[in-house]
Image 1: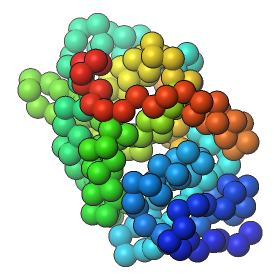
Image 2: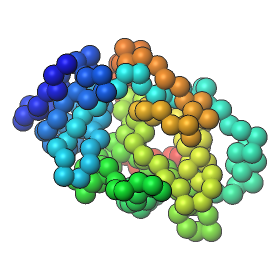
Image 3: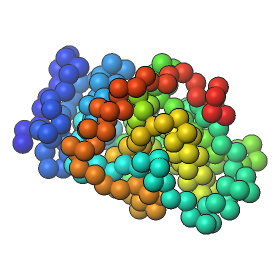
Image 4: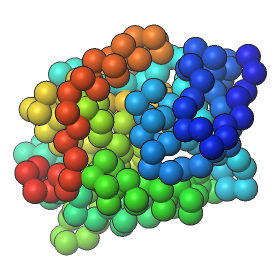
Length: 228
């Protein structure tokens, strides 16, 4: 399959035209309008500093349905002891900076300055949200993503203390379930999220779920006002 080159038009080619690795297109920009259009169509940006913007729509897709969240006995104990204080949209910039730092055995970060700035803009517009796990007043871990309709598109997570990011994710999944969200997009497989109940589904099934989720109104604004 050819890889499409984007221009000033924010429209994307059909996701079925992505190549075997999941790459659909290159180029364009990270304007709020283009990013929202991408997520509405099951597409996300992922590239390294110095490369053109690369747009992905992998098949299969890795997702978690909030009703299928699995919490281990040890994590239930962590949560019941209130080891971490969980908040929403209290420290978006700190979370994205935490996610930017390279992991062990990782030479760089895919969250470039351009990416960081773009998601901060989306946060200011009320579409991008962070979940923070605090311990003794210090940020111990967290995650961020995009909310559209009844779908949450996870982008990245980080941890500075054992179980911090898990506590943030589990709390998020529980709150999303209470609000009637139907899916958390985890993009590609990780053992970390598989242990919490995430699983692979076909891209066609994923797109059907996204379309159903977008039939609902998007809950914009600072989620800390009603989630904690």
